[in-house]
Image (spheres, rainbow, N blue to C red):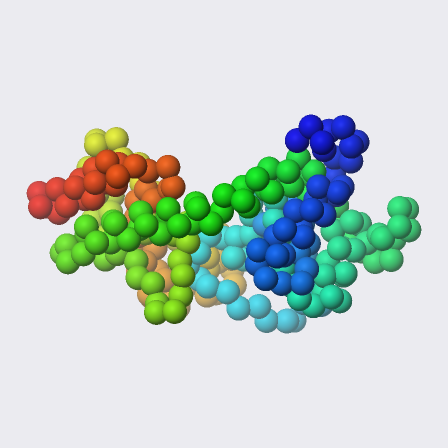
Length: 248
């Protein structure tokens, strides 16, 4: 952090370049382009590919509205296409390679050096974090297996899940949340409505066309799965869920 402050380059300096190189190596691609949010990463990716009015972009209806906009503090675009990476770098820097010389319409999407310094440290911890999330999810799924009234998340063969959320489907999700809340166990809903049902998009006319997504939006409830959970915490969560269904 102090290295960034002393450098005088608070945005798009050497630390950002270092983070980009490390991130690209972690992902296994040729290029990583750092920007200041997940929203801007998707926006920049679309622009770098020449996506514009009249083009069709397909996304999932049941997700955070970010799938239509995206969000987050700091973001990264990854690609092995040199031309796409170069265009993305132009877009994120007001369309400029040389100061005060602008080749195209761009935006100020630059990542700060402080964010990159934090990102480098967190990147070094990511595998451990993900591994612990998977183990926590595996424990919960094992404990809740066969429990009538709840469906746990599944992982397709040959795939790996990082379990950013551990989301189950429960018809009585609000009652479950109240029950767990009394046990001091926090829960969340990811997500309470489909993207087409959001006021932002309802004029497009896609509402009531995706029954499975709409059903999921009414039944999902996320349980704690973060890497900081202890074995005792996990046991408390699973026992509380089982107690709820035994009592209801």
